[in-house]
Image 1 (cartoon, rainbow, N blue to C red):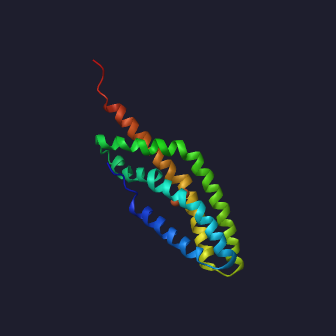
Image 2: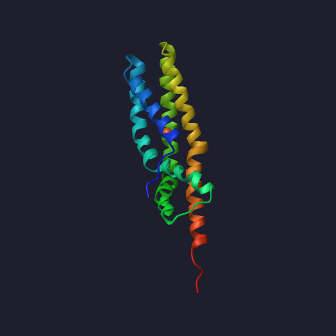
Image 3: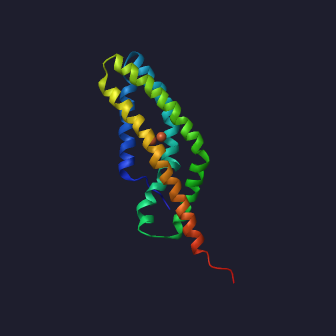
Length: 155
Ligand SMILES: [Fe+2]
Ligand SMILES: [Fe+2]
């Protein structure tokens, strides 16, 4: 079963990616700070696309009480997320520090659009830490619970 990142989250990621790409094209210290940030972001974005955010595609169905056996396949993703969560949170710390450098450089040089981008991406990281990642972990826990309820009792 293919688990799809909910469309608004997917679009938010694409929009942030595009704003980051534009920032890397700026000159001087702003462009340099943006390229440092992009190097940190790239492997992180891949993990989010591969296993951290796709479980959220099951949220709506699970809250409606829907179930099918293929949903259990999401555990591969949520187990990986739980295992890599400390590393991903550490990556956020590095990203937020790089964002601060970018924000300060952009503020000094009058790039108000890049200041706004840096603030939006910092906020995005917080929302992931406090809402998206925990919700994805919860999806795995709910699926595991429903599976155990469906195991036929031993004779
Ligand atoms: Fe993200
Ligand atoms: Fe993230």
